Amino acid sequence: MKLNELRDNPGATKSRKRIGRGPGSGTGKTGGRGIKGQKSRSGVAIKGYEGGQMPLYQRLPKRGFNKPNRKKFAVVNLGLIQKFIDAKKLDAKGEITEDTLVESGLVRRKLDGVRILAKGDFSAKVKLNVTGASKSAVAAVESAGGSLTVTSASAAE
Image (cartoon, rainbow, N blue to C red):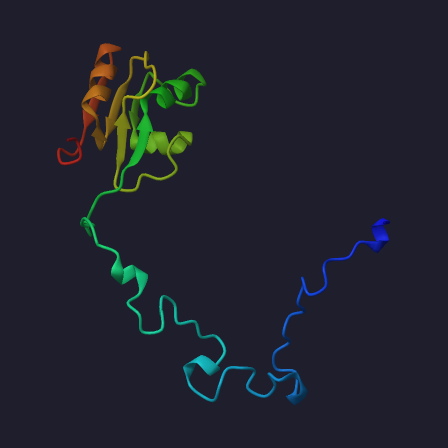
């Protein structure tokens, strides 16, 4: 047997049905779509429709509640702030606000404010002014000799 003699088993592959190619093909004219109606038109996909059976998204139980006015914070870890201070991208002498964090490139956008979390090592003595912070982040900044001011009381839980 040679490579050019390799063949699949007879009947293993079936050529695809070419739809809408004349009356001799068996699927000419309407192309297997029936006559008229929404499903005969192009650009129609009745998504999630299961032929009258209750659709999957309705059969599954619903859980929880999505708060429509929830706040979304840009989250920053203390370790990253330390890294940016070491790389001289942030000035540890002046006050670090949300705007300076955006300018340095640490935060892409403020969203509803910036929230600081305590992940990573932090040793710089800085003055931080942000919308929210975790209790452990406040403790870590104060233990390093700095201060962390939270501007809105509702954000810091």
